[in-house]
Amino acid sequence: MNQYFELFNKFKKNNLYQQNSVLYFLEHKENSFYLDLDKIPRNISAFELKKIIQKLVDENFFGQFELSPEGNRLIYKENFLFAKNSELSPNMKKEAVLRFFYFCKNLISQNKVLINVLSTSSTVTPRGVPFFIDFVAIAEKGPQNFFAFRELMELYLNSIVIIQKNSHLASEVQKIEKISMPLYFKMAPTLFRFFYKIIPPLRQFGSLVALSFPTDFNGLLKLHSVAVSYILKRKVKKIKLLDYWIYNLNKLKIKSGSTKWSAYHHQPIKEILTETEWKKYFISFRSKVLFDLLSSEPRGTLLDIGANKGFFSCLGAKFGYKVTAIDYDVKAIDELFLNLKATNFVNNIRPLVVNFSELKEDELWRFRSDVVLALGFIHHMRLVEYISWDKIAEKLSLLTDKTLITDFKLTTVARGEKEEFSALFLEDYKLDNYVTSLKKYFNSVELLEITKQDGVGGERQMVICRK
Image (cartoon, rainbow, N blue to C red; front, top):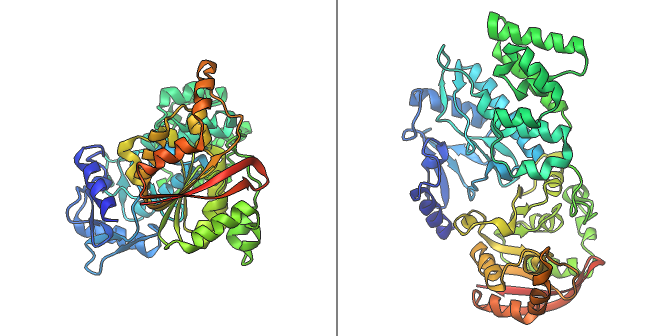
């Protein structure tokens, strides 16, 4: 935990975080993160801010946050994970927007508005709940202060609408941190672009309006009437329009499309999360090996790299670990999130869309955990991504505080696109080479059983490494 704090401070000092974000002012003391409400910049008085936050805490809006007895600190007693906007799956973004709308409703009831939305305005709790946290942008309602809907669209809603209409684009859209309005209307359906041009009052709301479009023409006229009344005549209250958007967003069904790996596992994740007899799902030889290893390790944080839909993440959570599940497969992570939501976010699993091969060294600290699972993908890193054994081992070491559990696929047909390199890398693809690199960064490296991946995927040599 102390090393996590040190890396967190280094991250802030390097100005890698926006100084107008509330997260820039996050501090730590005694294994907790906290926000000093008297120190953060604000557009309203400290008394009013504390009143707003107290109401939100009482409504459990912040999940793991609580207000100090003095009322001047918002305390977070878990490792605070800085989640990028591009790391939220489509349905996680939908959840973030819904919570943003509820946040706005809360502010409106207190005659306040939110004048800015940043890519750092939302984060994810250890139980997978996206939530809004940026208090710096709260201001008094007035002629010059209005809700930052455009920023909300560009960061969240634009990608949601595009993916909802074009699910095959999910993986590509996911990589875009922010979709500007011009880019959105190039990618959005023709109908949305058409009405955006001919109905000027709707321009202020962009994809919020696109999201609200009914399929029939009478519905469109009704929507136009609502928008005109709100924008021009000011006869419709903001809170009612927010209710309208919340209603439509709740109805929106987002499908992330089919991907190569999203159908790789078929385990009933929802049943594993909810049933008391969950152990019956971990009866294969490989699962039993993981079962025994995780049950014998001290409980703490666990990072599941290449988690797919979260089969082993569930095992970690059932044993009491605080799990972060990462995978670059958008659909797989989205399904994991929906299962967590369907079970009321009671399991300690935080899903994120993250590509291990693209993780940069200065951001590895965000995912550093006591125990790391690196299963089922190492052969792809070497033979497809052409990452050296040393670089793979070093990156895994930087992510691991205590124990790494990994494997080596003994036979594989995985090959990269560069055929001229295939023979060279295949010759280097040996267990001894992987182990030699691991020994450079871990104090002990032990070969365990040879397993199969639950009946598919060929034989794998299990390896456990300790710091």
